[in-house]
Length: 330
Ligand SMILES: C[S@@+](CC[C@H](N)C(=O)[O-])C[C@H]1O[C@@H](n2cnc3c(N)ncnc32)[C@H](O)[C@@H]1O
Image 1 (spheres, rainbow, N blue to C red):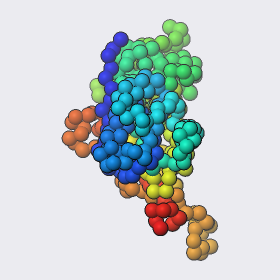
Image 2 (image 1 turned 60 degrees about the horizontal axis):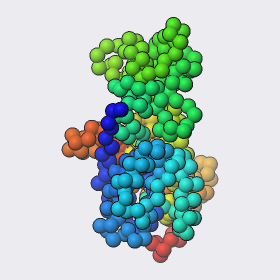
Image 3 (image 1 turned 90 degrees about the vertical axis):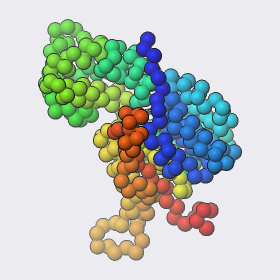
Image 4 (image 1 turned 45 degrees about the vertical axis):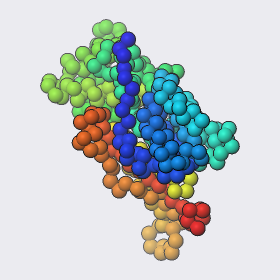
């Protein structure tokens, strides 16, 4: 088994600066190896906020939960780790908070999207075209659908649409055609390297092969884990779970994710002024959040040099608006 190492948290200093501002309930919806959680817990202690704080760590991957459990041991009294999908963020927060007798509202929520280095580097998980393994790609190993099911059961049109939609792959059609032809000749495709060699044989040479490989693998991973659908729901419901002045920070790693984050944040910030020309003095409904970062924040060249994963990271942060009634505003 390939020994994978756990994950350096990306933009950790920025996450702490934006999120850790008072005691309360913090939610790390993408716990991974617990890197960001550990940094937030240390920051809560340094600021003297830990006594009134609880960090809820959510991940759908049991291996990540085990690793994070070890890493966060010293903060046991202030941490609850739960296996779950962040699409159920509201239910998970409500359940943990009601068990603890706390109001189910968070002062900070973090989503650090995608897969961890640990998942990518573990060959048996099948996420990487660089490692020989089964075509799996499930973050939650109890989930019903794996990448092999898709590659072996979708027809040519469905595969082409998938590679185009979730991989933005220009050669989606010819890759899909090659996969179906291979299936007809050889029965099925079960290993990452088998799929990678079909893609290599049908992609343009040089640099572009690598891009095509990563786009096709990305598309399959997104489909297996329904990543974009669950993200929309987690953003909507997560914002509902924020306390007044609570903040949500989201780190995305590709344009499909970032587009959704940008759109949902913009929609939630907009007030509803009704049909044009009505001339209301107050909107029908106020926006519920305000942007904290106007533009997405990127990692510094120094961080990218130390951690190549940071290269594509984009951080967006919003704050829940209080319309005047909370204790902080009075
Ligand atoms: C980029 S890693 C997070 C790394 C973490 N911030 C750290 O510092 O170690 C993303 C993690 O989120 C988890 N994840 C992704 N989508 C999820 C979802 N919909 N629900 C729950 N966990 C998810 C993955 O299993 C993975 O462990």
